[in-house]
Each structure stands twice: as structure tokens, then as C-alpha cells.
Length: 200
Image (cartoon, rainbow, N blue to C red; front, side, top):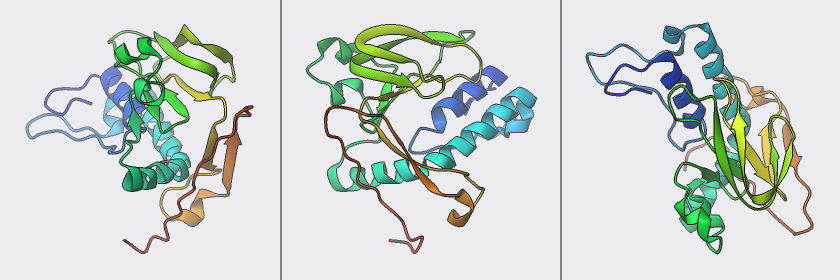
């Protein structure tokens, strides 16, 4: 978001759109540069930041499952496409997309002034989490549209646990645990990890 420089509203918004899916999500700066509070970049960016924070709270059950998978297997949360589909040689050259765990493909828009981008899809069926549109890969498609857009797709067979009403602090405020399921002919699984908030 502009750690050692002056983030523009666009750059800050785009960082929030990448950061909320990162293992370590924060906006901060070195000394002697303007602050990084969301409200310092105008109402549109503040709204985008608020929505991304709510989305991260909603996605905590999935992120916690991925952190536990990382602890036990060493697999990273954000993965190169080739890690999931190494046999698909063209994916080995894709360096601006990532898989968030085994199920979600994330393709952030990072080029200044751009509102859309090409997204390389691995083989299989993929669904846009926002619009519900479906594509069959391998393919290259164009997604995006607004400053708030971050292309994110679920692969066929996705199991996505989420909180129905993410609150601001205590787990009890997050509503019910829900599961978004994307049917597949192949068997998939996800081990849910629940933290009792009691420390290690």
C-alpha cells in the first residue's frame, strides 16, 4: 500500500484487495510519510477497505483450515498455480495469480489505471464468486470492472466455510458457520480447524 512512499488512493485500494487474502494483512508505513488509515483516501476507498475487512472475517474458517494445513504439511496458503497443477506447463509461467489453498484462484489487478485483467484458468470448471459465471479451463478470460473488483474464482469441488455475519471481534459475533459448496464429480475434502482461542 505504499510502505516507503506515498500510496495513491488506487494503490491503497488495490493493496487492500490483495492483502485481505494474504497470510499477513496490514497497512503500515515507515516514518516521515503520510498515514495509511483507510479514511485518508476518500469514501470509495474507505468503503472498499471496510468490505475487504468484513470479507476476511467471513473467510476466517477457511483461512484457519489453511494455516493448520500449513503447520502440518508446509504447504503455503497462497500457492503458485503450478503447485496445484504442475503437469500444465503454461501455468509455470503465471506469476501474477495464486491459489488460496486448493480451491480459490485469485488474480489481483495491479497495473495502475487498469480496471480489468486477463486471468489464466487451469483445467477444470471455474466459477466467479461474485457473478456466478462459469468457465471451463484451460482458458484465458478477462475479468474485473471497477476499483473494488478483485477477480476470484472457485474451482469445481470447492468447499468454502464462512461466517454468515462477520462481526468485529468475538467469534460469537460472526453468525453461523456456513459452507459454500461447488459440486464436482470428483471427491474433494477440507479439514476444518476450530481454534478455542485459548492459545497454543
